[in-house]
Structure formats: structure tokens, C-alpha cells
Image (cartoon, rainbow, N blue to C red; front, side, top):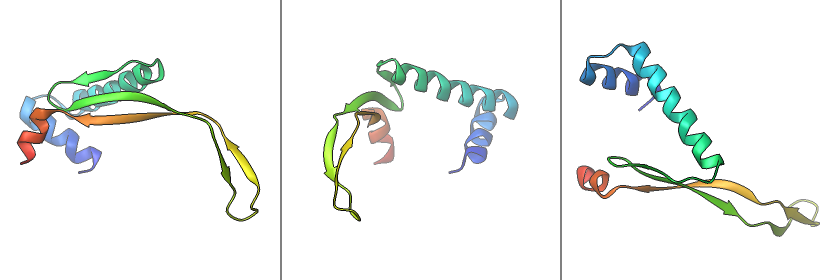
Length: 90
């Protein structure tokens, strides 16, 4: 489902305007991103949990040159779906 369809479906179910829902989803994304960047876990009960995870630095070999490279640590996001979401899709 693309963003436009997602916004349309929420607007239809909530009797809100597309603009309101678009602002809401944009704000949600910004807030989740800020929380993850700060190292916080974000739990949305009917959806799931977004958790920051720091990947450790590691040494790898460059495929074309064969030289060793140091890959720096990187912040990634783990998502765990809620049990409610899992039940709804079964």
C-alpha cells in the first residue's frame, strides 16, 4: 500500500481530512525517528515496537580490491510486530 492510499483509508475511517491525516503521519514518522535517534524504544500497542540497535564496527574485505575495510558502527531499527497485529493477519 502506498502512502496516498494509506492516508485515504485512515481519513475515510476517522472522518478527518486528508491534510490532517497527512500531517499526523508525517509527525508520527518524525517523532519515531527522533526517539530512535535518542536511543528510546517506541511502542505502538496495535502495531508493534520500534527499537534502536547499534551495529558494532567490523572489518570486512572490499569485494573488488581485496583490501580490508573498517565499517563504522551504525544505528539501525528493529521492528517487532505486536501480538495484536499478528492475530489480525492470521
